[in-house]
Length: 301
Image (cartoon, rainbow, N blue to C red):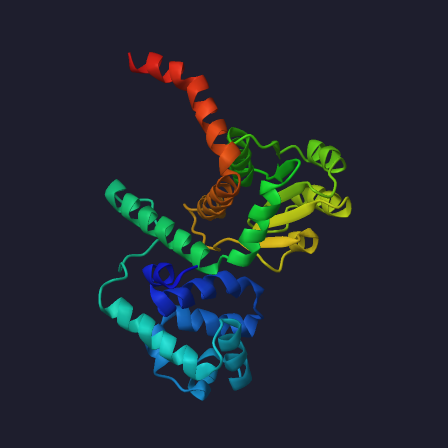
């Protein structure tokens, strides 16, 4: 990701907030307390020494330093500087001062505002945490694949269908599987040169893990799109694309927030593949558009 794109997501301070949300599920409980503290009160934590933050969170100085390093900083001093930057950004008014919790009596205008902000944050977090090297490798595999199978259940199944429809429109062979039995029976047909993609927010959906494992064992290039980079599905993934792990609320379950981040990853994959295969993708897109053009003309009359 280029520097100007990083800055558009809030620079180092924005990246820190994204890292906290993305990496917290893979931390120990004591490290999570440190991460939650710096994300919840960056200004207050920026004013604390390493000893002070350890006392505040009921952890040790070593835990604070390990958390800082896991978040991508050489030491606690660098984390404090990032926290100070995030606090200054929030105080300047550039970050929306609204809660993303939606109450049952919220007016619809507030619902729109809160959801729009949450969607923006989810996309920013996913973009900031996405490993572009892994993404590029996935694009390369898809662009040259003999066949691509995509596995997803529920909301992730809708995302799987979206990706396969996009790939089909540029002339590639792709299948979406939401039936676990069909997914496994198709996975046994995959070989080296094929690609299998598992889409699962939790990373622990057995009906998605099983076909990915089968594809992995038969030599296909396997990709996991998940919000949990340390989850079970990644054991059978050659490449892992991490999505945002936005906080759930009663009226906004994970299926909503995860779908937003998954669709961003899917669009990145598709555009990357279309770039790599442009000579064949462009005519295929034009042909599919022309095949449906008469339907659009009829509808407009």
